[in-house]
Length: 450
Image (cartoon, rainbow, N blue to C red; front, side, top):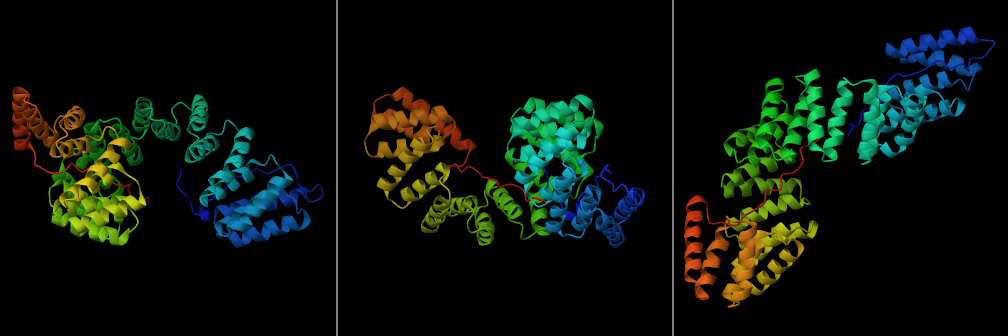
């Protein structure tokens, strides 16, 4: 859950060890101290000269090796820095600075699995050090070892109950474990310490959204926008939340702005297309999704939305091609359902029927597929099967217009006049409140990483 750092960001954490040459101890200690000060001031050449002087007489001096590793890291010479940190540890396995610097270097190069044993050793040496516990926990979390990360954080919090970084990371980890009440508790405590922290406000919004409390999520994001009105990440989160609340007129200008400022960012292009889709503007959706697919030709979600927009315009062959390409990239019942719709629109009832059957087998709670399958059975004269499928569809989604109307036809055919009338009345009421069109599940993609 940490972000990769540049090698120049390796922190200067060192300890002067007792391994100083007895004959030149004072001289070496002075050089090491001056070298550390030079590194802090970014006088790397001077630091290197001082450290080489120490190593000329004491080639296994762990402090000198560690500090020279920091110099190499700051010079973006990662391989040499790693070798120096490992030499320092070979010389003095208890050298905490070499442990922490090696771990930071590995993490900065996305070598989380290699960094973990180094951090575990550092934590064993200094379990009271909050920054080491935090780094270990975030690394464990990044490797999906969430329970272990939580244990480390809870132990660290015993020594620092009001630590903002610990509370924030506890919130992130408990959210990943889907312990949303705990996550909200930890993140709210962190926010009380730093009321204007944008990352915490965004994390709270994600927790609220995952818990189904969209109003609370939007409230946190509005607060984040007041603090950081030009943050692309905040704007994207706000737009996604508004779109999921069907507040398309609030979402649309946000995504228009993001796309205008970052025209080749796929996530913003997709989100803008999704907003136009929600607004019912299928031609504009198609235009934008053509651009998206050109940028991301192997993204199944993009081909899915493009296929849905083409299908809505009855451009059936193009829609079928896009949807089949999406299925080839990723198996998905929603996509396969739309393939069935495309077969149905093309008059290929057998292929449509077989497709709907596969969908309900892979996802038994797919209401629209049950409705389509029931309608197909009705047209084939299989009324008992049609009734079962349509009643199941309405059980899953009472507002499915097609299912209500088709079930009315089935009841009428079976001589159940009162039941048929109820279904037709229900269908008329639904028709007044919604467009008669296929249900499409929007598959918003992840925000771009900073």
